[in-house]
Image 1 (cartoon, rainbow, N blue to C red):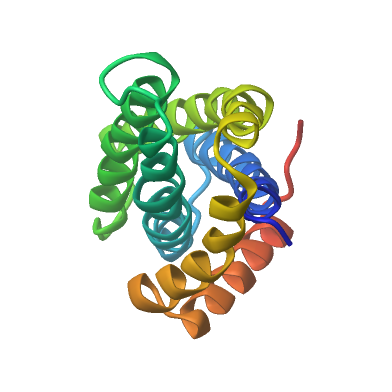
Image 2 (cartoon, rainbow, N blue to C red):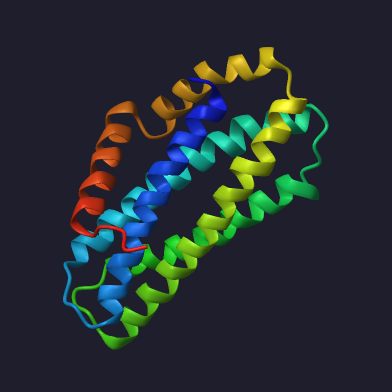
Length: 185
């Protein structure tokens, strides 16, 4: 699998999981007393898989290669993607803090719904821009030899940042959450 195919496959898992998060958040918003541990599961997936592993590979490997081959970091598509990553971290931090609560309150429900829906909306648009604009641009401008090197770099990055065992656990967690809270879109 090429580096871009790897990232796009990860996008599909992230999209399914955030669609499931939206279902969860809608139920929370409607007053359902769902386990806070499920919110913790969503935030673990978002923080460790979507951000630390996926966005980490983009920021530390793909974007750096794009910069090396002429893409500016302080403007243009990379600046937009990095700003999106930062905005996503604001939402995920709020969700992580909410997951530490011991019981649902009206304020907590609002915080969870607002940040879950905000994160989902942001990521859907962000992933669309990456898959349909940024990745094709990178494929056109980064030499194939450099793209080929990224395959091993992605594996090493996952092993050193999250760990291959945890990556598989996170994938399984996402699937179990998606099964428990099926996307309703």
